[in-house]
Length: 199
Image (cartoon, rainbow, N blue to C red; front, side, top):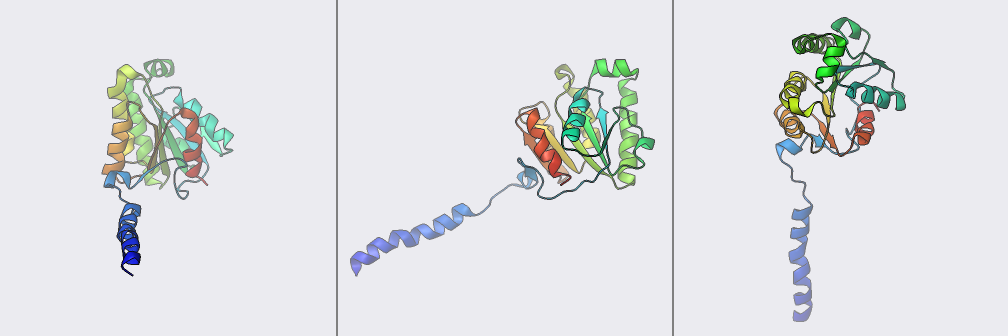
């Protein structure tokens, strides 16, 4: 009898330890940060307007992804507040490009004003706002950060790259405003979290 007790005792002691180890522990900042595949349920609808915040070529990448996923979308790098009347979702590709602004014939201040108007109209019309951050000119991290913060607190979902200049800012925004954030390792991995917002 004593021998049986000695063998059973370690098992009895191990059970609470296993229960404790399997309990989910997460900090507030991790509570809304999802890894691939992304959101647990859709939050966005089509049609989608895909626009730029900073006029980098990242907008083309997001539009290409939307086409591959067969989402009804409109490519408008310089979308104005009047361009989103019939939209249900606005996607911002955040990335400052001095060349992109020059080619469009607009200033950085013009771009910020356009974004502010667009965000105000989108939220006023109860549209879903998705922010995708791929990069931008690295020497201009301050401008990228400014554009990101301009949109960040109004976003319903943010997708970014691990190890990028914006990773800490994205995590801060997700925690401060309690919004979902997915960080992926490579640009090609964006498709999964992106489509999770729609279906």
